[in-house]
Length: 333
Figure 1 (cartoon, rainbow, N blue to C red):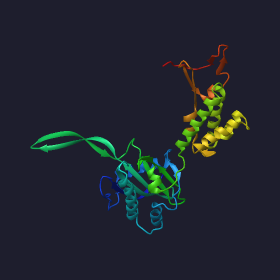
Figure 2 (figure 1 turned 180 degrees about the vertical axis):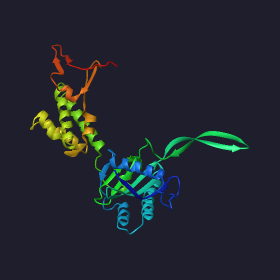
Figure 3 (figure 1 turned 60 degrees about the horizontal axis):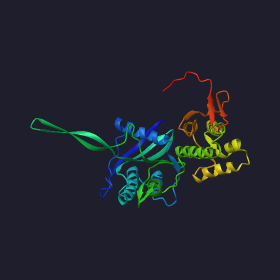
């Protein structure tokens, strides 16, 4: 990922103050500290699985500022200040939105131009303070606020490609008028995000477990088959089709197929959703079986379907026996 930073600036938005602290100078992008900090967060933003695609609404207050900057009608510092003043107005009216610094960056990646807005919410950390008086040092531990770095991830940000202008948004809900609200997209950017890949994978897993629990509780091989079909779909082209998977397990005319697709649609999932195979496998890659007396068995879905590996025996007393065969290299822990 070849990122070239053209402009970067940092503004301080503390909603306990009357005004934002707007910087009159850009960041020194020649500084190694700045370059490392900015590049690391930009790379995370560009690849974040929890980022949602979105487009600006026609009445977005941020959109005219972005367009003016892209068209060369205003300079970078003026555009960043205008955007941060808009954001600060929302924060000032809603005290539970956390304060933070806002990093605005104009950069290029593989020849494409982007504008990034990253709200760096403060993270509490401990620091020492030393006071020296009359040759005596007084060392004390204090609580301070720091910017996210290292393992700290940015919780609110957007990536704005110049063309096509399909945003990538990361956000977190905070109380607005007493209701948990994704204010970053709804009030500041005024855009309508799609589901993130991580959210889509979670919904796929939830509705699959729901259908399997309802209709396949007594058929573990079929339950594993349903999961395995979805994993294979994702491995083929990074997308899943729940309706097609259900048709393969329950039959093309089954009412269960429609119920499965309906549950996914109600949760906001599109019929053909793009989800990386690794996410689908992480959510559906194992079959869990739990008995009424608390015994649990966990095995890979592809393994649990193989007749020469696992055998399910229905006993006359209504219980079920599971025979697991041909296990290499057993470890007990």
